[in-house]
Length: 99
Length: 160
Image (cartoon, rainbow over all chains, first blue to last red):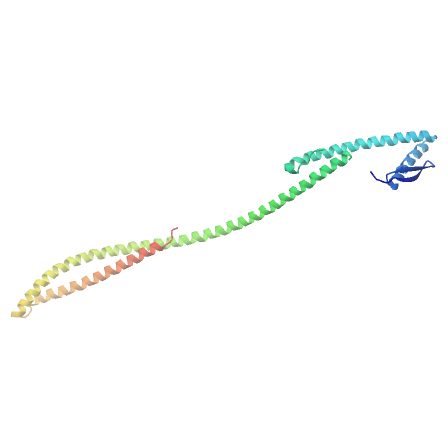
């Protein structure tokens, strides 16, 4: 965790927000741009209310997050399996403990 | 720490250890190959040395066979010479008795009359027998020396 927090001004669907965060400004702007693009895409698809579009955007982004987590878990399992395959090839002193 | 990062770091450590292990195996394999080459070279040299030794042994064997054959011939000659010498010795002994008797007769006759022709013949025969005896002794001595030389030669020939 970083020691100093910074304030980053971002604009989402025309509204300016000041975000106080310990992440880098570049990261914070990239996150805001992603949220802005997602909301605008939903509004372009026919949802006129900003609040409703924001909720749908939040659902869509959360769906992406969950899918990415599942993908990461699958990759983690693959990596662990690969480690378990390699471990018997090494002498006992060089086999680290499975996490 | 995120689970995937932890798993990845674990895998990274294992792969590095495996890499070190393979490097060790590679070094040992190279050293073993080098040792095999040295042994093969040594075996070739040993084979060449064995071939040379075999050639030398065959040559020595041939020399030994020739020496044994020569020794056999010399031994037969010596045996024949010994038999001749024994005969000559007996003849000389008999002649010596006759010569002694003749000398006594000659000495007796010289006091009264000249040596008769029969006595002269006995004296000449005696001298001839003495000469043959000397020759046979010399020949026997030579054969004995030759025999001794051949035995020394056989004793110095290395075994196969």
